[in-house]
Length: 185
Image (spheres, rainbow, N blue to C red):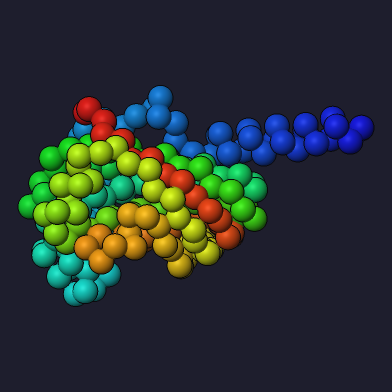
């Protein structure tokens, strides 16, 4: 096998693995399925301790993505759908798609929540479909994981991001860009 065909094979194989390991926007979840997953994720988040219960109760809004799938081999992609909760009720639905680069490998599923602790930060998020740029150092081994994460949405004092419920196998140090988009369900 020549160097160029070997390189093409490796790149093609990596792209195929990534493409088949994450949920495609074409297979979008229904509103009731998103609501059910959000309820389950909120119970899991409350069970993490009083600190999270207090944050849930005091936030102006919470963007919860109950099921994000991520796949990577050098280049990573992820996709998930969830809802924006205000007063514990879903008011809008969002999708999150991201691309990451850096030394990384694996397939992972996780949940995330962004807590908007002020009306100002919540209004700013709702006014715009936004990109975030971030960097993280993280690992997930089967059902335990940890992430050190900084991004342009969560470095502000009035927005907090939490990643929880990691499952799978994923290792990496990455630079990532994510796009949050309002969706109609």
